[in-house]
Length: 183
Image (cartoon, rainbow, N blue to C red; front, side):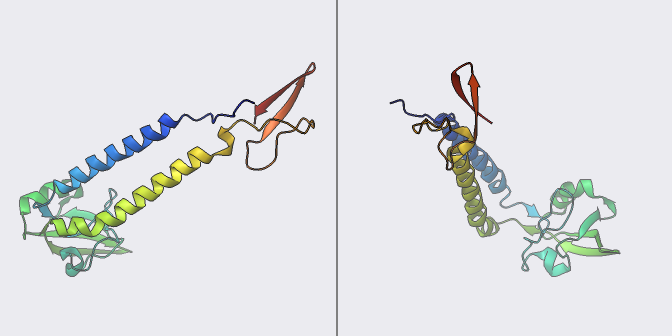
């Protein structure tokens, strides 16, 4: 009796795990390399939205920035220069952010702060847990995906694949020859 092999090779799973570990390592190194450098005092997204992950003990929150504020300008200059302005201000320097909150435009002075290992350690456990769970779910779906397996052999003589979570297949009868083909 021929054993049914999954159509998905195991090296793909190993490759995905290695690639994920590499991406995580590079990301963690990149974040850790910021320790000891000036930090704006809040987290923000690439589209300049103040993140809800900004803690209340960060200088941005204490100065009045709130989640969903959109940064429009820094010290009256274009927001694209924000990273440069933060580095030039140094730790403890103050930057004035122009933000949009709803239909209001506000000027909020925020002192920069030092990015510390404590800040990093607050967020790494949650980030790592989310990343590992996402990877595990993805691998589970990949390995157990019924569409990626051949149908069970027909032992009933009915010309149908066995029901259950195996692949949905179409029965073709070509001149007396029976073929199974995944849909």
